[in-house]
Amino acid sequence: MTFTPAKIDGAMSIEPGSALNFAYPSEEDTAILIRGTDGTYAAFGQKCTHLSCPVYYSKANDRLECPCHNGGFSSKTGEVLYGPPPRPLDRIELETINGEIFAVKKRCVEMKANVKPQKTAEPRTRRRLAGPSRDACYDQRGSTLDPIGSGRGCSCSCVHSTGSARHCLRYMLADRT
Image (cartoon, rainbow, N blue to C red; front, top):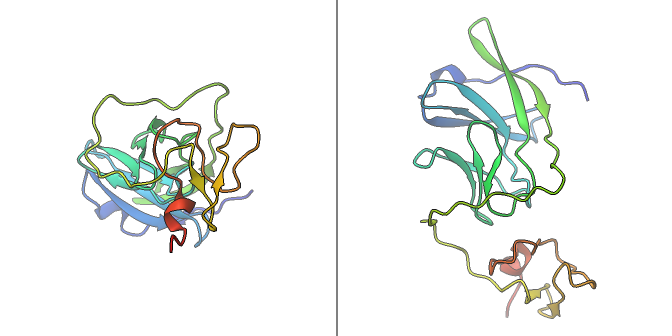
């Protein structure tokens, strides 16, 4: 794929410890530019590598967080810090040209073989979304399905490999009436 450099409007004016959303490499591809507290810039694709929910920058925690399934990424490297994401965020390479910041290339980071995401020992202060255990995944009709890994599969797109009691997105969106 050929990438065309694109100026990130407003990049030079964001304060250290803040972020700016932009589109790259196309208007449909959301990205996030982070200016670290040390003044350095880093940019990543904004889609979580678990189920493509948009990640946001948490200044208080200095990391990128996914609110859908509680995933966390380093704001400097995009590496997985905790949660279900299977690989780092896609990295967007930056260049400074004539005093302006440009996105010049998007690099998809491949998952390393036999590497599990790291877990942090710190408690999470954000409210967890309610949902079924990994043994009770439901489809739109409300019938119980077998979880992934049981040999029979699960027809929804959730991933239960974390073994936690967290929900799947399809369960949350299902009509329960």
